[in-house]
Image (spheres, each protein chain N blue to C red):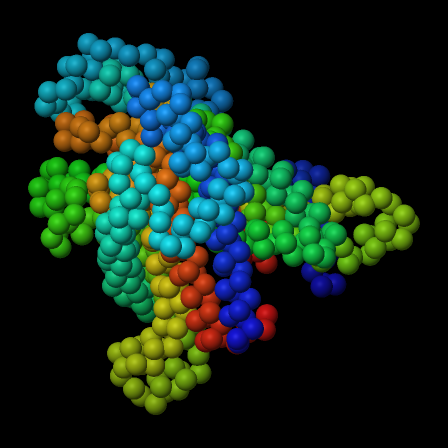
Length: 305
Length: 303
């Protein structure tokens, strides 16, 4: 087990280093930082001075190592456009993204799991078929489009929910629902197949033969055992939600990390692009690693496989 | 068995050969609705200039301006523009047809190159094995584990927007899926007699990979392609919607949804129609891919 954790952590660190290198050297291609920071009346001499100050006269690998060094001290440089420390901007935006992803996960579980249970109990009925269609649409329709259609109905026509921005609980409903759709479909399908498997097992049959009330059989005996794979999926999908939120944040003008990333790409604000991509990557990789380790802890086959 | 065979040989005569072909086709349980949808997409993509009643980029400001006030469906409907016009007076039907062309072009080209790269890498990785194989598979894991939209955004951030860069971004996200799947197949294929014999006979490695292994993984390549088309179309649409994909002004479905969102109350169908087109095509493609996988290779089901 310790060996598995060690290997997995080393792998993650390696992936992060590769990501940081790709982003750093990729960002080098996008333009001269000194030119971005300069104004129209900056002279050539001042420009050179600025380059020396920013360390742009040093070789690339040295600048990369410097960047990594600063990174570990929490210094991500300054935004070329907003002219303030990138780390402040990140810390300002991160909570909104985490809250949205959390709300999305909650909605997906609260709606997806019961739907899956019902679909399994009422197998091959109209309810099951409806759930299936819902899952197919949820996985195939583009989220940005669903978001816009929901805004149109609930905000523009019926005027019962706010269309964008972050505020009270009502601001969460539309974005959280939209972001949850894709994994809600996943939760539903997984719950359905997991329930069907458990409902077919010996101990559930025995509980039925024993004459237990059907409700008790389903909720106490079947559901408890069906929940294990479902909860693991929850861990994986939270990581996915964090990054799926890029599109949703843009549509709903949600002040999170994804929108910051996209704005910085549009404004060619190199330092912010690098920081937001690295943060998203870090969040994703750390979460995925934790889920992997937890999974290996629960299921020994993974460890030795 | 013995009692049943005379009966069957009597009924299968020359005349019934056609009907037996028909029956075999039917036995495949072809997913007819998805096939029809995809055929419409392909026909629109190929014959867009013939099918579209107008130039998709032709701006007719007079028509457009009239729509900026509060208008309703009945007012914008005319025999000239079956699906109405957008804010700049461009014909919606024509833009939708050309949108099919952009979606189909980008997803096919990027998947084609992605499949080529991934298959080559997968075959070599599986055939040679060893440390290179281990390293390549780690890279594949990293690429596949990463959210596709984030990966694509990294590439677009470095290279900039534009059709070519979108294709490169999509390629970068899909090649690993081919490589991983094909490599697994090659591991079992290279133990098979015909490959072992070829090695013993002294056939050079590249010939073995090209002549003996490649033909055996073509099925898998096709299945993976069909399972990824839907995702690819969604990814392209998302990038275009975010304004970092296909250049603005082009009739890409993602861009059309984005352009329509400023006038949701008055002209809601500007966003509705292109999004609906994406959804229908992706659903059809996913259903078709599932069918192809189940028919050609049911054991892939778990992956």
